[in-house]
Every structure is written in structure tokens, then in C-alpha cells.
Amino acid sequence: MRHGEFRHPRLVQVYDAECAWGPDDDFFQAVVDETPAARVLDLGCGTGRLTVALAAAGHTVTGVDPAGASLAAARVRPGGQQVTWIEGTSAVLPDGAFDVAVLTSHVAQYFVDDAEWARTLADLHRALAPGGRLVFDARDPADRRWERWNPVDSPRRIRLPDGDEVRAWTETTGVRDDAVSFTHHYHFADGEELLSSATLRFRTEAQLRDSLGTAGFTVDRIHGGWRREPVGQGDGEFLVIAHASRLAPVA
Image 1: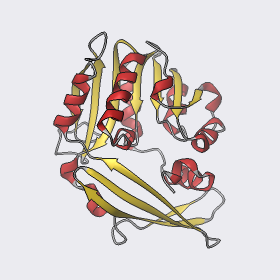
Image 2: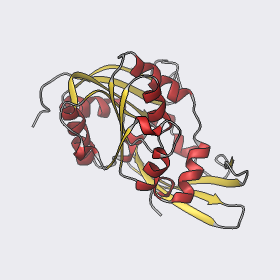
Image 3: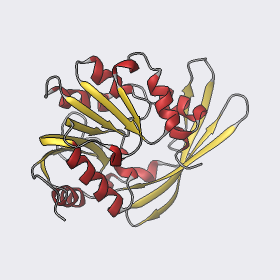
């Protein structure tokens, strides 16, 4: 199953249990909070962990995601009623409606095709007010994270709210240029095994900067870790903060 942890109700529950609040959430919360009472877009919001927290902090928040099962979990999360939830992609975004847009949990890497990534950035530029900020994370390919996605390094046990435990591990199934394919394996206490596959694009810093510039963004900062370390000295991340600097992207 492609993207099963976002689309399959049972795997959505596992994903939500595995992905607890962490330093990444602290980073995004702090950046968004630099704009008081902001109109915030969380594109690819998933089950809404950060989305709801941003709303609780006093922002007006819209969560957008194409996966209905993830949004169903987000809507019933405590505090979910404070968020506007939309099932869809960046194409549905209204013009000039947001002060800050965030893409978290490496959502930016799911846009494997350059044309799709360019369309998404153009939509985000259109949806942001002049000078509005875009904040997202992507893994630094120099860190070669995919080499640790194997049965030896990736096994984990995930405890669900009902007390059941799920055994999980990840395997890399293909590397072609800067696109990496992988499969998550999930083994449930009742004997069921579910698989979820995906492909991620590992763009370089130069590629990210070029694509943002073409879409009309100016890059303010790129950090290498959740404590805002320089690139290459943090957590193997690109944490990008940019702002909409032109009225429209370059044609």
C-alpha cells in the first residue's frame, strides 16, 4: 500500500502513536510564534499534532491534507474543533489567505517530481500574503539517512493507546539518483502484517534554493538541526525559512 500510514485507518493510529511531540514540533512552533496571532497554513497536516497546538497558541490555523483517514483522526483530536480542516492539496488554497505556511515531517520530500514541487511552491506563494513566510524541513542528502533504513538499524516497538504493541521496521527498496524508495513493515499483536511504501526526494541545498527562488521566495535562513545549528552540524536536516518576495512566481 502506498502511503499507508496516512491512508489506512489502522496504520494512521500507529503513526499517531509513534510520532509524539518532539524537537521538530518545538522548532516549528517557535518559528510560527514569531508572528503573533498569525493566519497559519499547515500543508500535509496529517493527524494534526502540531496543527492543534498552533491553534491553542492563539493562531488561526487551517490544516490541509489529501489523506482522509489522517484528517478523520485530526478532527477528533482534543482541540481539533479550533482548526479548519480541508481534504485536498495545495491546489485548493485561497489566494493571499495566510501569513505563515508550514510543511512538517518532511512532507516536502514527498513531492518527488520537479514539476509537482514547482506547482506546490507556486500555490504556496499564491496563498501567502505579501511577505508571508514559508517554513519546511527536508533531510540533507549528505547525511544519507536511507542507509539506516534496514532491518538491523530500524526496528522499533510502538505502543498503542489500548496497550497493544506493534513491531515495526523499515527497509530501503531502491535508490535512483536522489529519489529513495522504502517500505515500512508493521506487525500487529493479532498477527496482521501491513506494509506501507513510499518514495522521497532528497534535494540538495542548492536545488532547494533554486526552486524557491524560481517560485518567488527569498530564503532567509537554512538550519542544519532543530536547535538551529549550521547545515552539516546538526541533525542531518535542512530547516528552511523563506518569505514571499515577489508578487508572482517566474513563468
